[in-house]
Length: 181
Image (cartoon, rainbow, N blue to C red):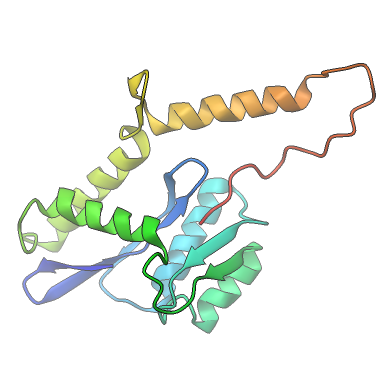
């Protein structure tokens, strides 16, 4: 996604969103829109999650996502790529919604930021808030996204270690809970 940082200059943000937690797993900001922008986002997600092996990455058909570099980066990370039909209005709706919200809430009606430093600072603040304070639970009100994910992981870990009956466990491992889209 590109947005005017300062008049006649652009900043580009690539994101990897974990669909299980609705958190950002990786995101770089750059002054170019080349394949290394999206491979950097994938690499950041790998660092955040330790491993993406077995995950599915859903993208649109943009040149960055169909590039050899991104294909190789996905293969190296053990990520399977997914794309809808060309021209599908529902293709990557989560990313489109995320980008629209990001622009609306950071630009606040402006056409650009005063300078690149301010653009990056506003982006960092918003992205941090997105991962930590935006989740609203219907009964509890605002809940930090990380707290919900930690609670889910704790519950899942406990359910994996509890014995429900006296038969020997035959259940598969609970590894690899969170998938990326």
